[in-house]
Length: 363
Image (cartoon, rainbow, N blue to C red; front, side, top):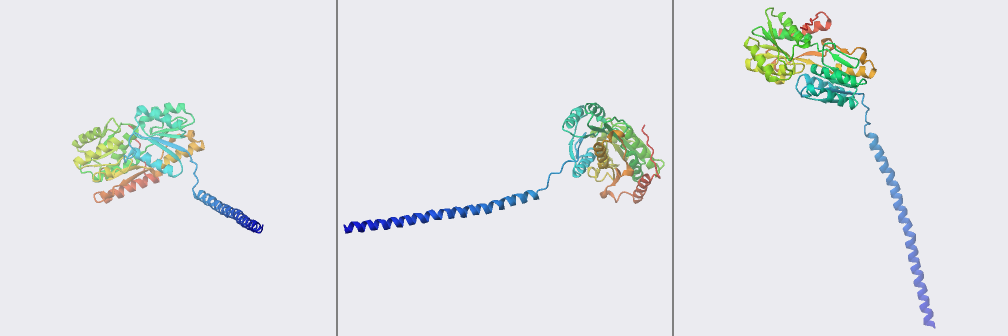
């Protein structure tokens, strides 16, 4: 009996110990869970704060001021007509506008491209060629809420179709002064894509400026019949060279490139056309007529957004507006007579002041 009571006592002690051990484990678990929950609670706000801070540092997307597109006759990087428009679009984009462009668009395809831009919500579409005129007027009738422009230079407009002047003749006068100083023969040449008023007036002003230096200077002018055919233009320039021409002015990208290539062969000179073309002929392009189109494109958009576009959609910006400039080839400054630069710069200053009015001779 005594041994049975002892065993029973031992069992009671062991049971008490086991209960104590189980009780301790049960008490520790809530402590571990509380610590874990506290850690999560402390980490979550920190992560959210970091995320919120990162979001605050990201620049907010600025709303576009408006949408403008340009359609080009050739590649955008031609150092000439098309690149002038492309550079202007780049300036517009930097100023907060949404821009678009299409290059090397044939005249037969202009309507399709114009419609695509109109359908995409562009408010101002520039058909940057004389040859795009018919297409621009046709599509403009279908989209009366969209504004268009074409490079006519003849004041042909509609309520939502602008025409923009290309008074290259003003700066051509100064180019003629430089040509007269540099020409050995006094026989100057002009190559036009077509004999349209913008081109014809360039040649007339070119020889007028030249004759202020050399009264005996003469001009041979040829209309190539194409804006972009370089080989055809070069052939025409070489024919002029056979007649004594040693300095050319051009109207059109193809005529400019053709004249430059001809000048290389006959040791003559050629002007760059509405862009810095000195890299096309480092030793034969002493001057370039440069066309800064940013002020024109900006005015297009200002008038479009202000609702004043249709008031007078004829845009005429020239030498006085610094839209047309004469650039000198830094690599040829040693062969351009100093007096030529002085006289040309003075002519430009006189045009700006109004003391000199260059005559516009369209035909």
